[in-house]
Length: 324
Image (cartoon, rainbow, N blue to C red; front, side, top):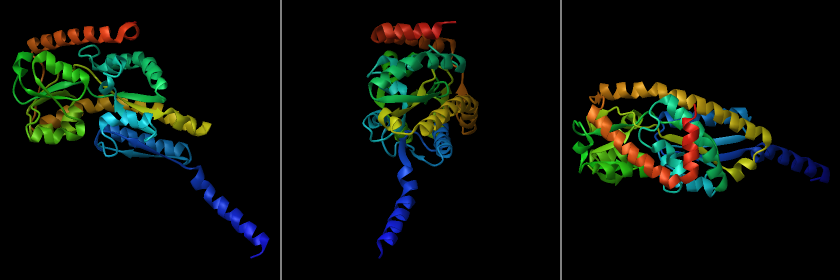
């Protein structure tokens, strides 16, 4: 082969390899089923990033804790095992109380208040995550939390001794305060835990009740609207910084759109989930005056405890939330 022909072949080979070399592939682990609205939002986010980046950034969503378990996702992103991931913020309250501000019962009980709390919490989350080599892309709230329980209840006293699913420090603390037996169960394991009687009650949203087919094992849902915990999409800072500027901008724009879309979806889905549960035989009930008062007392104790642990930053966060 002549030197000139060899040069042409080498050049052609190099040019053919350029698109592959320019493409970046990221993994995005999530703890929730593919059919959950959070995961559907992630899928749309990934699709929009692909389109906006001209195919330069491909994100694969790994649903239902198939790549990492819920509690492992944050560490995986921090260590670069996954470039970005979705976490439930309240899961990390023991690491820093500021992660758990949206898990305080009856602090923020509806979507307007939850959105206000999210905005107040965001600067603190950015600071915490930056110190760990990560960056916050967006947060989206779950629908309001209620009580799934196997029997009718009129007060927290009716739940003493019951096997209670704890999925975060806050829900474990509630179990302690109401005299229930806490059992640590993540979302992906909940259906089996309910079916086998490992769990008899828990607090979560209608979304979790529907996804886990809770209606097959439990027949009562008390719509207490106690709090709206948030999922957060986080990215490894080194991975983000390695992207070119246009791809970074495409990622941030898609994240902002996913946040707005996710909050809207959450609110729209809230009524849909409750209707779907009722259609499958579950009784959707308002809490009694006594149960509401009991929960307010629990919330008061937990807020005081949280403020003590969170210190001056916690006070600043709450002040920002309460500002008119």
